Amino acid sequence: MISLIPISSCKIKEDLFAPVITLNTDDVTHNRVPQFSTTNYSDPGATAYDDVDGNVIVIPNGIVNMNLAGDYVISYIATDKAGNKSTKNRTVTVDGGYYITGNYLAEDFDSLSVSNGTYHEVISASLISKNRINFENFGKYVNDTVYGTCLGTTITIPIQTVSGGSPPTARTFQGTGTYNSANKIFTITFTEITNGDTISKHDVYTPD
Image (cartoon, rainbow, N blue to C red):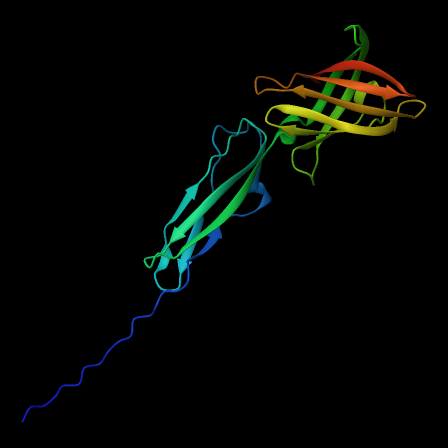
């Protein structure tokens, strides 16, 4: 008589789900960094966990240029043994506003490059909008609170109308300038429209 030995079968869990990626230190301190502050961006990285395989290797992909203001995306990819793949992105802002911010002695020039004198200017970085800076006395007018944006190494003054000076007068400004990492001296060339008259000017900013 042949006796049969029962064979127990174990069911292998089917892997249907991709790993879950978690970004390390996903906060403003690591995702919004001052331009020129370091040579290379220090990527905090990410981790991934799969319900079948456990911890899974995460591969980052993307380059952050610390010399050019703007937004950069680092993509993190994790794949489990079953081939399920997941991706999660980190957006890193290289902020030129953090670099430009400070106290300046500015000199105002007319269209013929004749100096209209110097004045003190305070430039601050926006705490809300990325790569945005605020001028307090733009164009040598007290309380002319004009804003600018940084991209690459260019400052752009979008067209805007503000009221400043003594007495307060509505003026419309628009302009552009460039800066670099060698020093914080830069020039903004702009147009000013006051009471319908348009004039061209440029101001040179030197750290004070």
